[in-house]
Image (cartoon, rainbow, N blue to C red; front, side, top):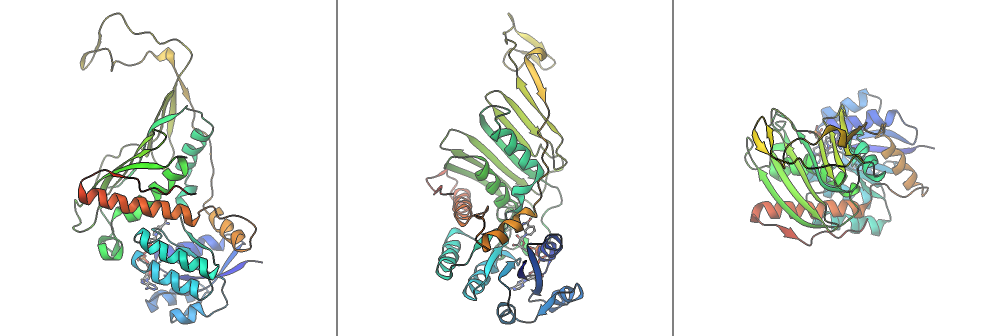
Length: 352
Ligand code: NAD
């Protein structure tokens, strides 16, 4: 039996949820609510029940609601839905900050209802290739991970440009990259240092770099730019035996790995086209192997199936409240670091 669900906020992402869920059997969208009646009508035209008030939506016989409104409404809508006895999938960023999430998780505990966040980018192909390569130790032990997304179109001219609405790229793409990184690296974050820039949009970060240090010694950079015309690779990972690169979402890239052929330094200085150097001269090709990237075909619809099974008590959630809390605490630290111009330490609770 599928689980009946309603969508709150039937804009870009709300209608994406509806399209995705149409293709699976575990959840059925029965109705939609939006503060904009035109959006409700769009839902009705697609065959869903249209609710004209939140109360009407929450008093219907659905078990689950999916919240896909601008970020500043996530907290109050999640609390109302949980209090009305619904399980909740909330869009990312799960909340505006960790304090809001604490309040919501308290209500979820009291009401004994599931609360999870739509971290769908854990099912991105590029990310799964990286995870597979690291989990299978195809390229040794990483010491530096760079994960970035870069566009040149600026921020869409909607609520994403308004700080009070939860705008800015840290709360938008930043939470995806951070959630992926924390799922990838099995170690607590010990240090956070951030530069958040407002290049074209005053009041919100539209380009940022965040450096994170983990207890196991690994260092990582997450970067989101909306005004870069020549992008760097989506992933660049340095390990103690090689380098992995994934260029973009098409997932072209490669692994170059030191092989067993002994590497010997040249007797004298090496003359490159940029002048003499020993350290930065190219490595002899016979000491390197090129490996293909692992093949992965993840499906982000598996997220919904997992939530449906968790509602029925058949599976544990893949995206847990504790993981969402780690992300929000580090997001808080990133804002604090950027504001104070300092490295922030000791914020990660590291329960997964
Ligand atoms: P959007 O502006 O296209 O849609 C938001 C909708 O919410 C609008 O139709 C608006 O009328 C409605 N709304 C606003 N306030 C409301 C309220 N109080 N109650 C009910 N409806 C309300 O925005 P979007 O791009 O769909 O983003 C919505 C959410 O989805 C955001 O939290 C965003 O971060 C998230 N999102 C997630 C992903 C992802 O990959 N997981 C991608 C895009 C957006």
